[in-house]
Amino acid sequence: MVRRMTDGVERRESVLAWPVALALAGAAALRLVTAVVAGFVEWHDNQAPFLGTGRARAYDVLTTFGTAGDGTEVLLLIAAAAATYWALRSGEARAAGWWPAIGWMFGLTAVLAALQGIGFTLIHSLPPGHQTARLVEAEGFALAYLGLCVVGVVVVNRLDQLSDAQLLEQDDLDAFVFALDRRSGDVRAFLSAREAAARMHVYSVEDDEFTFYTDEGVVLRASVVGDRIALQTTEEERPDELLEGLKEFANRRGIKVDPEDADDATAYAVPIRRWHWLEMWPPWLRPIGMLFRRRP
Image 1 (cartoon, rainbow, N blue to C red):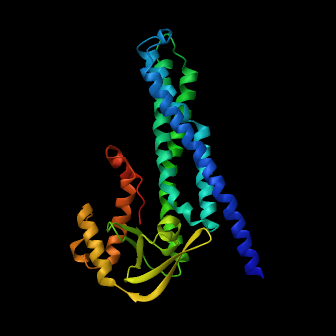
Image 2 (cartoon, rainbow, N blue to C red):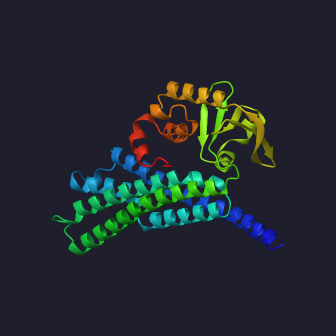
Image 3 (tube, rainbow, N blue to C red):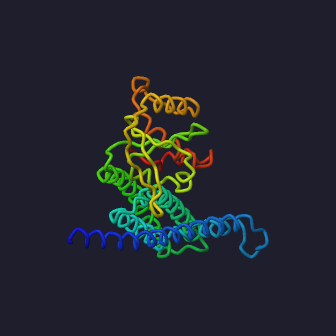
C-alpha cells in the first residue's frame, strides 16, 4: 500500500513537473530569441536618424541585444533547471535530454549580459553622458548576471552527468542500448534502456524501423504500451551483427573510436551519442555545440 501511494505521488509530480519545466524553458527561449532578433533589426534599421551615430548608436544596438541578459532571464533559467531536475526525479526520463538546451541558454544569456554591460559603458563612461552612479549600477548588475550564467553552465553540465547516472541506476537492464535502422544502417546510442525508451519516437517503434540491442548483442523486443515505449530482453543474441553495424556506421560518419577498443560495442556508445548531439547544430555552430555537448 505504501509503495502504491508513493508511485501515485511520483506520477502526479511527473505530470506536473514536466509541463512546468517546458513552460519555463519555453519562456526563457522566447525572450532570448526576441532579444537577438530585435538586436539584429535595430542593427540594420536605417530609418531612425534621431538615434544618432557612433557611441550612441552602438549603445542602442548593444542594449537591445542585451534586453534578455537580465535578472528575469537568469531566474527563468534557474527555475527551468530546477523544474527539469524535479521532473527527472519524479520519473520523467525525457527531462534528461533538456540539460544541453538549458546550458546553451545560460551561455547565450551570459553573452547578452556582457553586451548590455558594454553598451552601458559606452554611454555612461564618457561626456556628455557621463554618469558614474548609473555606470556602477549597470556594470555591477551585468557582472552579477554573467557570473550566475557561468555558474549555471557548470551546474547544468554536472546535473547532466548526474541525470545519466540516475538513468543507469533506474535501468533494469544495466546496459547500453543501440538502435540500428533496418534500412539506412544508422545507429542511435543510449546509456540505458530507460533513456532509449524516452528518446526514441513511438512511431518508429510502431513501424518497426529499428532493431534494438544491448551492448552484449542481446536483441530487445520493442513495443508501445499506452503512449510509451517498452523494451524487453529476448533469448536472441547477435553480438557480431551489432558490432558490424557499429563499425560500418562509425566509418561512414567519421566517428573515431580507439583502435584497441574497436571490437568492444560499449566503446561506440558515447562517441555515437555525441555525434548525434552535434548533428542537431548547424555546421558553423558546432564548435559552440562542443562546449554544451552531453558528457558521459
